[in-house]
Length: 406
Image (cartoon, rainbow, N blue to C red; front, side, top):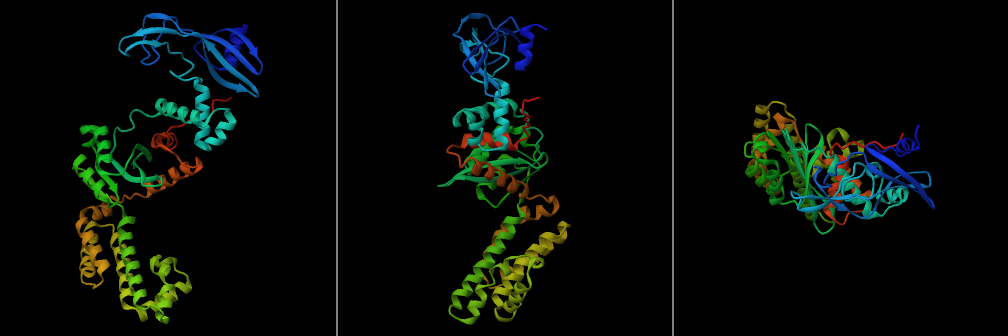
């Protein structure tokens, strides 16, 4: 076997010819050139006429223990009119504009998927900002270009990534269980940008959209995909009743301040908000005491539980009838928080009832937000939205990387 062939297999780079090798302290410098004869534009990848040669360049490759390996080559410059003039030749072992080989960048991105950037910088000997730039390039190469195709059921939610109201809007595909779109902001204009990226033909294929009760998201969905069924997240609907119950309890606490009944009522918050099957013995006793001593709070508790039971129905007709009965009861309950809640539920009745037939919630999206929050905490926060969005796509959009090791 020739020495050049042995070196080429040693560095594990295809489509290259090894011309020379030398050592500089702890670095092995391998002189290579592309196997192809005709130069290609580094941006568009098409064969273009040569212009002249640029200065020698080096690309850092995967090392061997403490031995650092660098590839050196003097790239040609090409005249590419579609790209706007003279461009540097593209090489098969590295992305355009990068000082690292493909194998090196994929290892960095793989490590960024499983650990924080600080550990990646220590392991690979590169700067923090370099890790972010590599992650962005790998996402640009590996992200499925058809990610927005064949969307049928999507979920939309916001994620706060920094103090002072810095938010991202994320869109997930319920069928493929992955993030398909993310953008800074959480208003109606932000979500409209998603429908613009989707285009009229793909928007017309949307069947349902799960969202919370955000007026901005409702407006954007109604304008961008009017045929899609809006499904309001069940958790947010039941939270309306839980918040109303807690408001009634606090109002009663103000009226019963410095009384034995008030002190007993103060201890019932979690008993009132928990599911009945999760109550401990002591919490059950406190709930029974509320039934005996405080009719308004217990009425609010029954309203909260009855709403949950109405959403448990599998038949839309039965659920609609139960919701109508609940709305009638809440409207004449003489409890102002529940009267307001009834107005809200009546306003969004169709979207709330759609949950019964579709059985879709934002639970998966909330779980994805927890994963995104873990990514942000692992990095000790992000200063810019693009850096976080690149990490979201790397970890949550179906990109699979394997360490380029034997």
